[in-house]
Image (cartoon, rainbow, N blue to C red):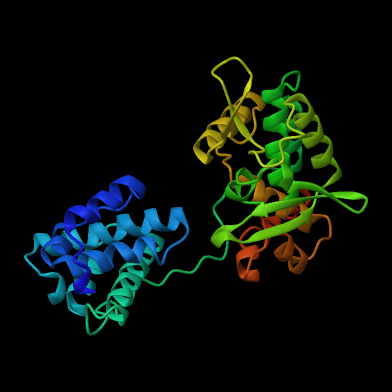
Amino acid sequence: MSNLNITNDSLNELISSRHSEILLPAIVVKAGSDTARRFVEFFIVSIRNKNTREAYARAVKQFLDWQDFRGLQFADISSLAVAAYIEQHPGSAPTINQHLAAIRSMFAWMVSGGILRQNPGEEVKGPKYRVKKGKTPVLTDDEMRDLLKAIDVSHVVGLRDRALIATMFFSFARIGAVLGMNVGDYFAKGKRYWLKLHEKGGKYHEVPAHHLVEEYLDAYMEAGELLAQKDTPLFRTTMGRTRKLTERRLQRQEAWAMVKRRALAASVNADACNHTFRASGITNFLQNGGSRDNAQRIAAHEDIRTTALYDRRDEVISLDEIERIRL
């Protein structure tokens, strides 16, 4: 690796031109070009998901800046130094564990590349944290109906928003998987239409389109004149207040802002967010007799325990049950 003669300036040029989320910490720069190169490779080569890369980059830089402030050299970071950092970390248990995972992964990459002899984060334990119930706000069936009915569908923006929300609800899809779809990812197979969802890690997940999703997507695509543009984004931004679609793909933050506006206008749960419709759809499915195994397959969860986090049936307490409390 040393004979490649990669300078810190050239590494910074690569990072700034393609991966602005990665910053070379001072402690890495001082460790030399071999370490700096391997550090950059960890993010660019080993992590394909952009969101994971950004989260890990923030976590690792925060950790290394903390170590540098205390006068340590990169090669001198020990398990005690990692444990001390974890001990004082002000974040929640999930955040601390995510940061620890990032630190371990980075050091493991350094070990496999011959930069370090051992991983100082390997034996460090994070705080115990177990979740039995998710925190994502869930809309009741009445709230979902009110939300969809409140959307003005006399123009393409309303048609787009209704189709986006319905797609997430009826397919249990993540916002990123839906926004990653192109027009051609809504396609005919036999007598029905299907959705090709863009999941994490470059994977695809195909699910049948609910009949309401078909109705809403057809109306939106016809109004937006998208039917012949198979390789272009399905859900797009608009030009200001013109209500004309652009060719730019709608981003998660823009979808989140839309959901907030629509929830406010429909007077439903103001805490609703992009993930609400995944949780609401799974809860509705289970309430209507669907099984967790099938919910897991539709949602493309690798572990059924993840699906269980979205099961909010036990949150509904009927008036009849309350009236059982008697004096």
